[in-house]
Length: 377
Image (cartoon, rainbow, N blue to C red):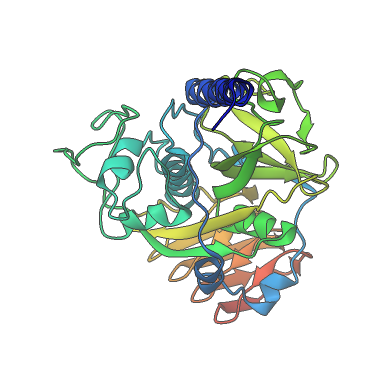
């Protein structure tokens, strides 16, 4: 038979437990009121299965010490996912918006995250999703935000919008290392990048790096509670900072830089943040040939349209970060010289002719196996 003292002790313990669980509930509510997360990482087997194997000549390439895809005009403004765990949809849509700009100079578009949130066939929702969500657009065209606005809610798929002709192709994961992340962002375009959010990045109640850090500061995890996975858009890096540049989905003017972006260190974190990335190609569009005639011609960041034959003539021609993709033909003719600079890639299946008294290929330019390149005077 229990004594009065024992019953009193049980009452005290129960009261403490009730307060503890009440506090946990309050913390959960605070988290919901702050910035939502939502990335569910692919399991290891699936991630490794879809890693893209790069051709040997690309593996030898060097990347610039810093890169910001915004300078190439291929990054759209940051958005706000609200209290819905739909970062996976925002990272996927942001990647497609950037790819359309990079490959076809199409846009800038404000694509509908709501389409992906409600119509994906994987069961992804405000409770989370994964980086393969963009594969929804392999068989269905994207639509605009204006036609199917974001409401930060789950529900049935319902829209009468005209779908765009673009389709995602070649979805893949990226080897989880600094060099491969940079290479994918640089050559294929800004894309879905995930990490684990600890409370020293965002604590759910207005604190943490995202809310308090100074412009240009670099996030390094030092402590805190693991709040879950989050997906953003990898848009660049800076070796001097030792950090990646990412576009978040927590508001257009949020974060330490005041524009929805933040810096996160390559390494040196107290906890494993489980970095991961996926990327893809797109098809269905057509691009005009780059403006390429006159005296001293400089092409920087241009992509020649697949399925087209484009002439390029000048006194001198300099190619920097130029892509001649599969099934594209480019004919370069210069009276003095042609310089193929860093970041310029002649992809497998491309066809190019360089006619000039002096043709120079600088380190960092790539000629993939299967590219046809005719060089002459």
